[in-house]
Image (cartoon, rainbow, N blue to C red; front, top):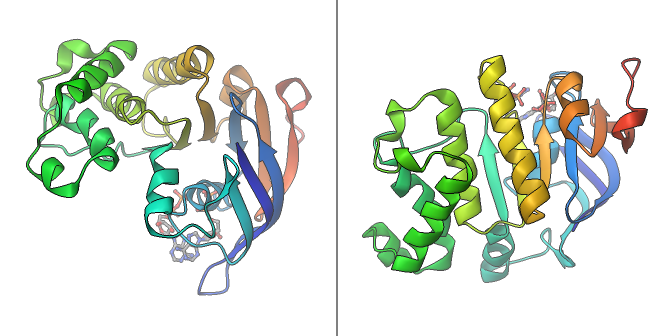
Length: 237
Ligand code: ADP
Ligand code: ADP
């Protein structure tokens, strides 16, 4: 589903973000990327949906090279990839349902979505997504009136409404309290198991990684220093 072939990313200032990464992530995996601050976790994640260009190598998504994709083809690949951020990235003044509908933008012409014209099927999808993350009662609440955990569940719902096959989450629980952290990770686990969505999640905590991942990838200085099933990931790494 996601294949890294000799991928390196060197930033314009010469800092090496990723150093010759080779790995394959299969459909349905729940991969957690761990590593100290600066290890390359964000760089790894942002390379997958080409939020930035890699310097060398190639990334294949579902048998298509996102590295070489152009124009429409790039947009089509990106539709399959949802993204969740530490800071939620919701439109604060918009309602929850509006934010979830934003996941449908890639399926329509720009003018319709600027006007906020989404077909009824989209609203149906959005409501079902909100139901799945147990927040449907907030559909018409302004996003900035929700707690952090609720906002993060809205951003999960947005990725679900997008019908993403892959969800990338960059430190999705870093700004949440312990209880909310568990709720958000449980929601991610549920969509992974029930919908078969492939998850690639950056986490600080190896403890949480062990609890939720099917596979842990450890990064250090842009290199893979550990890659294996959860049972083999020990504290020494
Ligand atoms: P992590 O997510 O594990 O904290 P990052 O992927 O953010 O690590 O960073 C990896 C390395 O790349 C770090 O040394 C960081 O300072 C550097 N880096 C990240 N983004 C940029 C950037 N836009 N320009 C230059 N260097 C960057
Ligand atoms: P992270 O949360 O992944 O550790 P930071 O908070 O350090 O990342 O970085 C926030 C932003 O600054 C990101 O957009 C990243 O690309 C950029 N950045 C990080 N390190 C550097 C750097 N050394 N030079 C330039 N930009 C950087």
